Length: 171
Figure 1 (cartoon, one colour):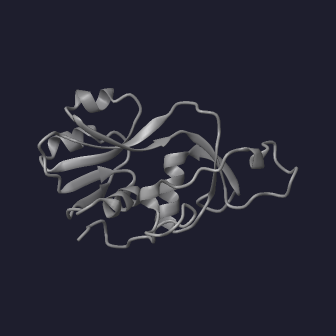
Figure 2 (tube, rainbow, N blue to C red):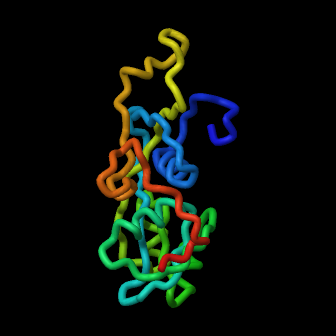
């Protein structure tokens, strides 16, 4: 989908939301039956005042921070994979991570958890193919909107907030 080589794909809802926010483009996201629900979750150590947020979701992180009351300036660092140890080792670190059970968070002493969005497998399309040309009855699947914190003020779920090009530093 991202390379525009295909018009339909199966992926996680979190990946779709991140792509929509990062690219400024809309996708039609349709729910499939739940398989293994996970949560994109803000986490840190209790008592910290984070100055850095480590995440594989920089666009979701910026949208969430923009929607928060009185957001504090933070540096957003994009990392892939297991980042719990990095967050724990950085005295001013926090994270926005994909969490399924929470066991890895607990093992790393990350005891402040705020789930931001639930994610599961979904079907994503740029445009609907003509009727009868897919193996999946796409119109029968429910359409999933973007999370409310990802919408422009006064906007709608199909119009994500504008892409921010601030290098990850919020002021």
